[in-house]
Image (tube, rainbow, N blue to C red; front, side, top):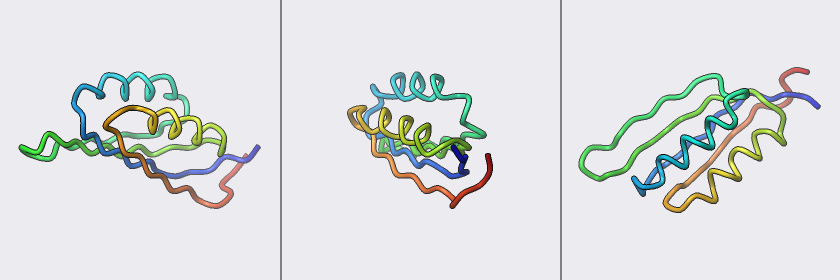
Length: 84
């Protein structure tokens, strides 16, 4: 299967869910190239951007697990075919 490069945007609206997000990200560390997280002031909102390189199935598994966590919003975008 071909790999793709892309990004995943995560908005954290529930601070109690951060531990679950970090667990899922750790479980998929092999496809994560980089991560940046920024808190949004007094609104108790956090924004995390993940750069990934993996197959469509691997990236889909990661976004699917993140999307099932309460208080988390996830969007992703991937390149067209990138490499083997």
